[in-house]
Length: 266
Image (cartoon, one colour):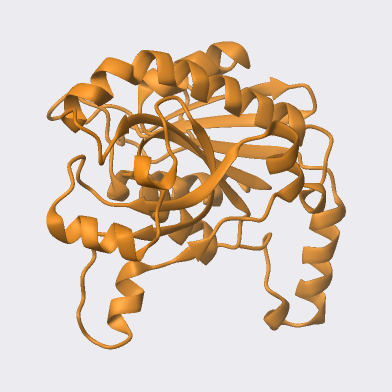
């Protein structure tokens, strides 16, 4: 992913990209699927809810915003589903709020933060925090040449070697689907994706950010071991509070590292 603009658009656009990479990061958007994950960061950064919403009338999306150090921070939470009253998790809500946030707020960087399942076979443990190197789908199966690759939708995260080294985060590939559990077909696709972690939003955020050329990183904390012995839903709920604390700590450290730096220094 590259900052706003594309070198193929001509010399003028390329110059804008280069200039953006040298300019200190000013505005970031943090996309988080669950209120439980978002609120500790809202408090940490002393953000306020936008009551006069920048988003279309009638949507449940919530924006918390404020200034932390030298950064304009926006935490975007898709809100509660009006019909069922639960967090609007999944790829549809994630893609919609990401698109709306980019169009409205023009961020220099997106952080998709959240909890995820991890695979012990790939070295993941409960509480580990990963900086995903790439994101792909595991439940969009289109067995037709080229459409199959489109379905997987592999996209690279923005490269942040200095951030990864400084914070000693784990690195791994992320696989995304709209189900908390894992069918045999999903498992085969996840293995094909060489994924260490799985979530329900990342690849959707990556798709939109790639379309609109906004650098994006993925910070994911492991709540459950997908290839472990415990039922996924039970383990997820059991560990959600403690792992969310680890996630919030990691995101705060990421934001502190970003502060005062330009994109090319990450």
